[in-house]
Length: 318
Image 1 (cartoon, helix red, strand yellow):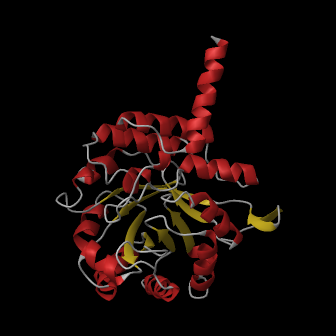
Image 2: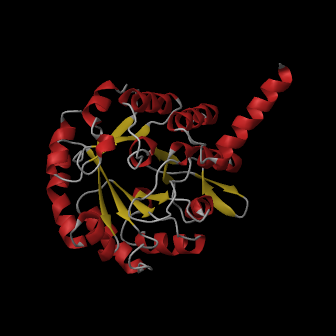
């Protein structure tokens, strides 16, 4: 699609951004406590009602490795499909793809690491081997006319090898594009990226993958996620992943916190005059609700501030 830009502040920013909500899958998959399926279903319903038309709902993986998502088929069967929505699922292999196909997803998601060390620790194979594992999944997705989204993990730093060369990120992104990926997320899996690094990485990757097919995926371990999104906008990126209430983390990276909170991203975009199509009030309600279900405070700063302000106003009016 053709993006239009508005000049705000000192740079040209997009008039619209597209946000993929990943809280239901990437956000919940590492939760240790079992989450009832009805809670997951309601979370997805709330997100769709808030306008999240790009929703990563679950993952078709072995329950042995990710027991939290063993109810993928049940969840998908219960989800509403609003007009214009895109429901995606992670399918790491053909077994997962075949299981997912019966649930009628709009999109399947694959991933590869930019670090050999991370690839070996995470999925016990080299980067090249991981790409070959995904080849039949990509071919099957195209054969069934499903959209294919891909992610480049640890693109800004690896918990095992440290710095990740930009050339490695470019190489993996190019391989995923060659598999036919319609969209490629460049992921700061452990949240160590900085704004300058973001510009450098996207500048390099955009030489082999068109900018309109690239997406920023940031974790907030060092509190840099929002700054990195602003840097991405200035680099011409207008697709982002985010997670309601900042849910998520990375089990392979000690200390890594969750994804950037959807509420914080939408608050940012509203301040910049950029349309998201999302209802911030409903997102705040949803973030507070799912955090209560998990027995902890939301990680969204904007969400918590807006909820506190609302409570204060209600108390004053009582």
